[in-house]
Image (tube, rainbow, N blue to C red; front, side, top):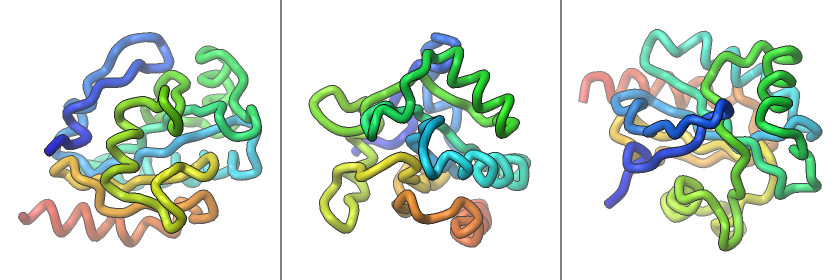
Length: 164
C-alpha cells in the first residue's frame, strides 16, 4: 500500500523532489491559489509551519489552477507572490491538477486515502490533508477549515506518533 513517501513532485524551482524527504514527519498537504478568497490562509499555514517544524512538521503547498483560474501565474510568479505577501518558507511545488485524468499522482493517492463528504474530488482551493509520520493520511479538511483549527490535530499527531 503506497504512502506519501512513495511519490515525487517538481518544486517551484523545477527540481524533482522525493516526498520520502519528509519520512518521519507529520505533513500537511494543501492545494493553493494566489487569487482566491482563501489565499490569506497562506499566513496561517506559515504560522503552523514555523510553530511546529522543529518538532517534525512540514507544510507542502501545491498550486492549482483548476478552480476559477485562480492560480494562472508562472512558478516564478507564484513563488514571488507567496514570499512577498505571506513570507512563505515551507516547500512549494510546481502547479498541478488535483482532479481529472491529469491529476498529479500524489493527489490521486490522497483522494483515495481520504474521500470528501461529497465524494473524493477536491472541491476548491486550500483543501488540506494531514499525513502522519508513517506517510498515511490521518484527516482531510475542506477549504473553510482555517489552518489554526488544525493545530490540535497536528499536536496530537506529533506527540502520538513520536512515541509509537
